[in-house]
Every structure is written in C-alpha cells, then in structure tokens.
Amino acid sequence: MENKTFTISVYSENNVGLLNRISGIFLKRHINILSLNVSESEIENVSRFVIVVDTTEKWVQNIVGQIEKQIEVIKAFYHVDEETIFLESALFKINSSLLFDERQIQNIIKESHSEIVTVSRDFFVISKSGRRSEIEELHSKLKPFGIMQFVRSGRISVSKEKMEVTSLLLEELKS
Image (cartoon, rainbow, N blue to C red; front, side, top):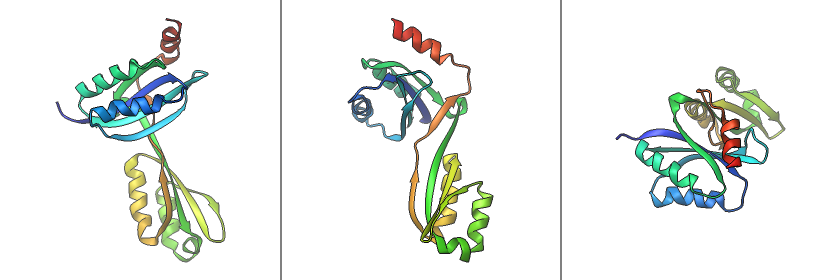
C-alpha cells in the first residue's frame, strides 16, 4: 500500500488530556502529524479535531479504530484529499516601508488574492486563506522582501460527501 494524505476528523467531548492521548496513538506508530486543528463542531458541547497525516490506508484505519476507543470520542472518520474541501490560513507581518516603496509587494498581494488586515507605522499584516501550496507560493514571493513574522494554521476541512454527522453523532451519544 502506498502512502497518501489523509484527513482524520474526530468528534469528541471537550475533556482535558484527550489531545495528549490522541497524539500518543500517532507517536506509538511513528506517524508524524502534518497538521492539527481543534475547534467547536456543529453540535453544541462537541469538539472536532482535524488531523492530517501521510500514511497508508491500513494504518489510518488502525489509528481511527484506536482513537474511537478513547472514552470521550464520539466518532472518528477519515478521508483522502479528493473527498474533502479544505483550507489553511496564514498571516504575514512585513515592514511597512515596503508597502509604499516596493510596488511589487502590492502586485503580489493582489495576484495572490490576499488581503491587508492591518497597517501601522512599523509593519503591515497580510492574510491569506487557501491551499497549502498557495500559501507556500505567497511565502516564497514575500521572502526576498523580508518577512518579520509568519504563522500558518492547521487544515480545516469538510467532506464533499453528504454526511449526516449531526444525526450520526446524536445516535452515538444516545448509545
């Protein structure tokens, strides 16, 4: 079996220590987590972990099975990239003088469909949402000008397939 990128979605109660136990499942198998995001889900008091890994389908099936054995976990799913719609976000902090002195910076912002979120005397901040490759491309274009700070979020993702997640999870919660 060949390695692929998988997005694992874990719906759980919001309890202390769960993230540590979930990351331990990956650690035991020597599988690196490429991206991790935790947020509220569409169901009140239920959190959603979005974990991105590069592994085989057999390993991802085993991992999802182990994750579902955690008491607080309601349900876990996995998808390949073609089955999901996903984005990441990034912020770039750049020296303000460049915004006015380097016309090319304005073109880069416009061409990359980025936006300026704040401007101060010393710096300005650019926001970009999109695929990781789009963010990496913007990073490489801005790097020669000097990036003061850079941060990228983990992947956020929804499935293309109609999933009655709410009803599935509510059934799991009842049992």
